[in-house]
Structure formats: structure tokens, C-alpha cells
Image (tube, rainbow, N blue to C red; front, side, top):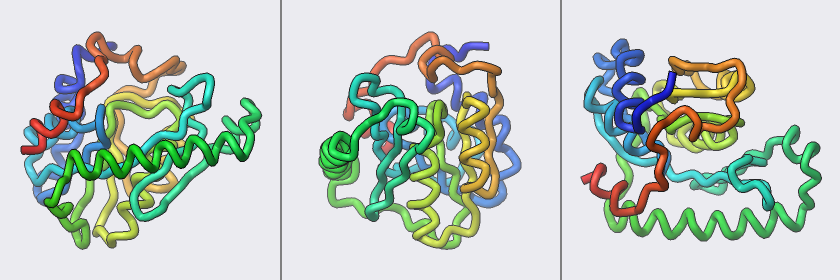
Length: 207
């Protein structure tokens, strides 16, 4: 099972989220890759579309491997298993976190501008990414969302590792993932087209 692209993955994921249609959900894509998935989910189940800004903290010599993640409102999560295995130092973590928080602020200016985020309070919030390898980014997203008192937090991705599913199930009220392979080498392997999205592609989907 391989998805054609993020939009087709979003439509497939949306079919598993039809039970949320009546709740008028707020679908939050994690930029950049989660936004086209979220936009397609929103086409299927309705509701509102917005972004929730988080950044992966990648291992210095293997950036795609998340040793943690940071989000708005100062939230941070570290993955102790990855840190133990890789031996990343506290100084390296601090350096990477500073860089990623600067990028978080840049994306906030580019993707939101002066437009305030849609309020989460009392809403059924669906947090969408293009996949979960470690789950760190989605865990941070769930914790950021909880700060705004939503009625319910649902995490939804087209593909995930078993480890990520276990981590996120402790954070979200519901986790929806149609494809959990026995071994997930990387999220990109689940797509024929997994190109690096530009800011312009993301902002076009949010207009």
C-alpha cells in the first residue's frame, strides 16, 4: 500500500473520519506536509481548516529522525529512546531547539500573517500530519491543542509506526490511522510523490 500523494492520502484518511462530520470539526494541518492531507480530509468531512505550528527536533546527523519536537506556547517533548540511542548532547539539543523555534516564528508570520488562529475551545479538533515515524511532532501538537480547551482531540495520519501509535494514544482522545505497517522505514516511503512543499503551496491551501 503506497499513496499517490498527500492529497490522495488525505481523501483515504477522510473516509475513516466520516463519524466526525456531525461535530463540525476543526481540522488542523501540521505544516508543511500535513496541510495538503488536512485540506483533503476537510473536503471529505467538512468543518474548518487551519494550521497548528510545530517543529521536529531532528538528530543532527539524521534530521528526519525526531529526537523531540517543539510547538507554540513553549511546549516541548523529547524522545528519551532516541536520545539514549544517539547520544545527542544537551548543547546540541539546545542549538537545534533555538533554530527550530526561530523557524516556527518565521512560519507563523508567513502562514498566518495578521490573521488570528481559529479558536479551539469547545471544538472537536482533528490534528493531521502526513505520517508518524516517532510520533513526537503529533504529541507536541496534541499538548499545544489541549492548552486551548477543545472538547476533543483526534490525531489522524495516513501512515504510522506501531511505536508512534502507542505514544500518541496516550495524548489524544482518538487516533485514526488506516495503515500501520510492521516496519516503517520512513514516512516518505509511503508515498510516490513526497516532495518538499514550499510555503506558497501551503498558503494556497489555506486561502
